[in-house]
Image (cartoon, rainbow, N blue to C red; front, side, top):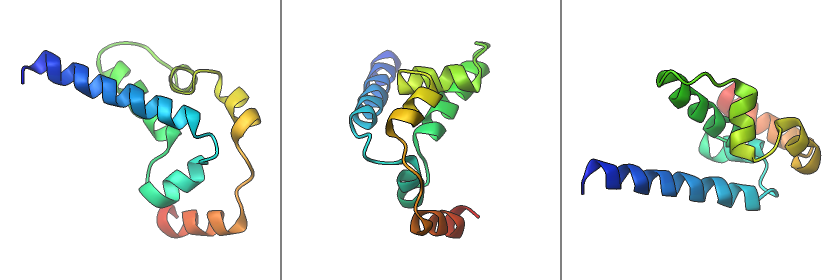
Length: 96
């Protein structure tokens, strides 16, 4: 496989992951962090870091909007719920 095809396949897989997570608003970021060690915010940060490494200025807010498809505060208001005590305890155990 040539490099361009590999890059295109990787980009397609990333877009599919982003779209899948956009459809699964029932899955909270804290659940993803507790289970997999990364979440939507991590993905948007990695996107920002990749842009910045290539000399493209991008803020955290711009990266989040690119990933979430809307301003992060708007996404949070629409989809994020308060973390339960269990979720917070699990997060503290693995990321504390």
